[in-house]
Length: 394
Image (tube, rainbow, N blue to C red; front, side, top):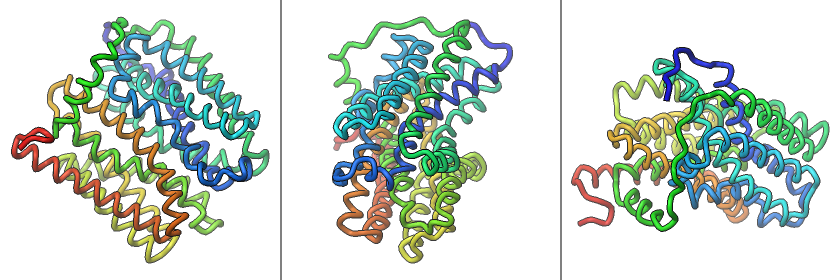
């Protein structure tokens, strides 16, 4: 591989924009979740799956997705993933029957996984050694920025043109990005393709990762974080005053990003990533108690968003801190991808069910408990590392 002598900022931002499109595969449903029954009346019990089905393939193949992408090719993966996503959004624009709509959401999981695996690799290739850290920090913002843009621009589009217009806009954006990136990245040097992994090797790979309290720790906490992040942004809006709802939901992801890149970076100079993650989880739980006492409080929502940022920054920093070897970091990152998709898949259906049974109070209590569990699982795994025991060891 040739080393870049300059950073290709234009192409780098194009790849980041593809990441926004991938995040919008979750966000486009989350921001209209309270309106979706207008499109599909009579399916309230299954509505949570409209968000979470995108993560099913990530649950199954998150750990080894990088191996498959490396074999297929990073540029080809990114472009084809965008075309698949554009096609599914175009089909959704046709107001499919609910069962077929769910099928398109599952197929979008192929698109989503392809972009989030190929994207950061290509971002790194487009940067120099000095700017690679900045490039990947920019990449890490794609989820929060996409949610903010959807709140600020997607919702007004829906109000003026209807729900289906959002799917049409998403399809057009992804198709345009696929064409542009196909041309822009054609001369980019990329790693040689590798052999496809054997399916028979997958169980052993998973077992080795999940027995290690060092490789597993970031993913274990990330599961509880992702179970709450998308779900809270999806189900919380109806409980916030309508006059400030759009502003609050648009600002929350950006506050999370800003906190992670400022206060989180400063705190990481003074404490390890695991401890910062635990602090973030405890602050998240405290914010939920605040929201229980003052339902829909914008200030409490902003505090929750800031605490989200600490969990995010601490979790990603914990990977290299706990796993010095590059191969171990790769496995730990794969486990985080798998746990993230699992959390996204579980979170929204769980929260919808909790609201149906316990209303708003049940929602905030459940989320607070999940945050406390995130802090606790890190403490348990830290104890195992201190005793140098594998999970299941004695």
